[in-house]
Image (cartoon, rainbow, N blue to C red):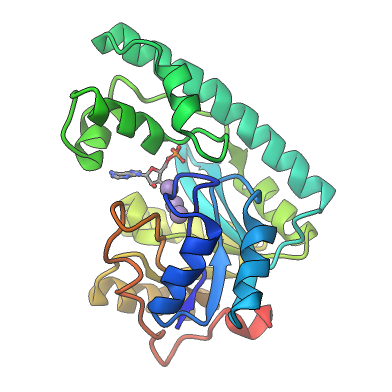
Length: 275
Ligand code: AMP
Ligand code: MN
Ligand code: MN
Ligand code: MN
């Protein structure tokens, strides 16, 4: 089994690279990529553990991107984690995350009286990088909501009191940087954005034009219908297909790695250009 989209405690996952590699091995994964949000801090540690256990490893990252007034996620695979341009981009994204976290904290304090949110988020952000699930955790701990899903729907998603617009990198620069660092750009979980068909087609046209090579066809908890729709888009746009559980931890995403499947036969796998 191949899994080219996973998270560790270096971003908003709950497992160390060692725990992640063991969990992946237990789920039949023999090719793994670590793709933490806007960081490569866990990549070398994860690579040496994976290789020592006889697992193929691909270095990766998941970048937050502004496109057409929306936020999308692009996974970079096979990147050189020492590439200067890539490291500069990561620095910028992390500065944005920090500034956003301070603003989320201010808004949550003003709207509902949550105290000291920024410092609390820093304390629980195991990789030093703050993502919205860290705020979700605080909101749950302090009794504002019962679970992660509610934290997002009530407070953290676009339109809610804790949402802060952020100037992430644009699609062209994101993909150029991935390519410049020797990597391949993959559109993460295309169905998660809840775009209309037309909007998704527009995105794929832009994505292709600026050098995107693949889309996740088996993505997280995607249904069989979604998988066949996405594989038809691969054919239409001559894109390669990727597979990624988007695993974040046993509690956060208990089924995502269990639901990994092989790609539909008509798809050309991204593995063709990664090995
Ligand atoms: P951020 O990159 O800081 O905006 O955080 C995005 C992350 O929050 C995603 O990668 C998911 O891990 C998590 N997330 C987003 N939406 C939801 C949701 N509705 N329920 C649970 N987790 C979510
Ligand atoms: Mn995440
Ligand atoms: Mn994502
Ligand atoms: Mn992800």
